[in-house]
Length: 433
Image 1: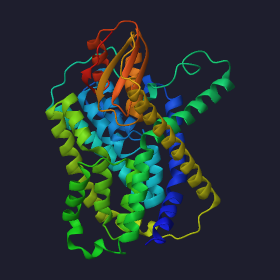
Image 2: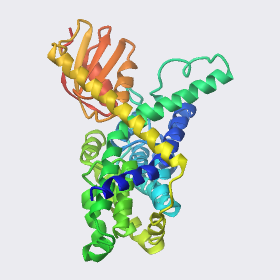
Image 3: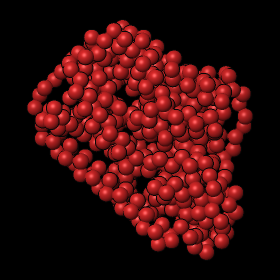
Image 4: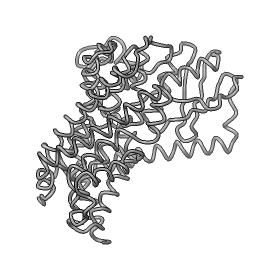
């Protein structure tokens, strides 16, 4: 086991890295080149067309379940219908261009395409049901409301006139790379580490065809077990793919693995609480019911149609090429840099606390914020607060769960409204000096 585990770990990295890096870069290009207004357009009517568009928009976006809630709520507050927001919430965390490519690398294109279609159809069904069950109420854009993560671009050459076409092109490409590394990979790198380690461990300790010999793992019962594990668990869609691949190699039916890949990224305890708090119990019921029923249905359908394809793909043992090795090494370097940045931020926060840094400056307001769990969350809170004219700078601290707001006088309820409009909760507002 001591020798097998690192071998499996390296093999999984070789499979994961090329597709992940390409997918992250494509997602960065979408962020840098696609106007946010184009993405938001056409989602306001409570009809199936808005739901369809929301699911189409959500499928390629690489947002995890914690990042999709404030984004969907931002769409809702900017006029999107409840059905469109729900469709976006269901379809988005199950897919993403990075996840699609990683799924194809590990499980084959038939599995990846089937999963893509399943996520899209599930989002549409959930959105249509919400439009039928939940009465629509008009919404308007509010001060501080969040919009799509694509609006989290820094002020500068992307927002104003460009020096020239070539300068503009390189500026957008640089922004695409920055967004791909620091926003997207920065939001999931810890979960990727956990997912890769878990996948290597499962492959190492689980005998071949282990699940094939377990009667409970087959059919609907096995899918229900996977569903019970996946619903409360936070698992990043990309990081969950190596785990599912390891389970399939160990004999778990592909349909049960599909249930895990659909329900795990789409739901977790934090997401369930956020949906209930922001959209209400009726939407939550439809949301959970749709994910449960559709994931089981598509799992059973997959076992009937394409059950053999993923296992055949995972059986390959070819020697890795230079591109896979370089990609794996680059991914390790990037994750090490991100981990070092996160450690430095935490160390600075602890030092500030030890030196009395919790005392607010005269022009500073400190707010305790609940629900920030990743880089997406930090960027969303910062963007929402800095959209207020009087705010010169907002500095969220992920480690301490707070945000420091500097600038002209702004009433605390207005700051709280901006944060809650972005999908987060103000727990204990600090004193405004």
